[in-house]
Amino acid sequence: MDCTDGVKINFNEEWVHLRKSNTEPIIRVYTESITSQKADALALRFIKEISDL
Image (cartoon, rainbow, N blue to C red; front, side, top):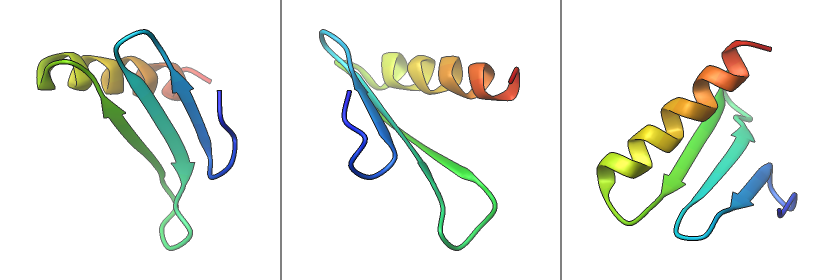
């Protein structure tokens, strides 16, 4: 986990980076995985987790 600019969580073959926007009242979610479908699924997983808080 890296907390330099938001929170970046590394997994085996993918990662997610969450950071607060400085210009809008939103949390930006960036992901990377071995396919775009897996990256989208990872983003949706974290969006749901954040929404449930």
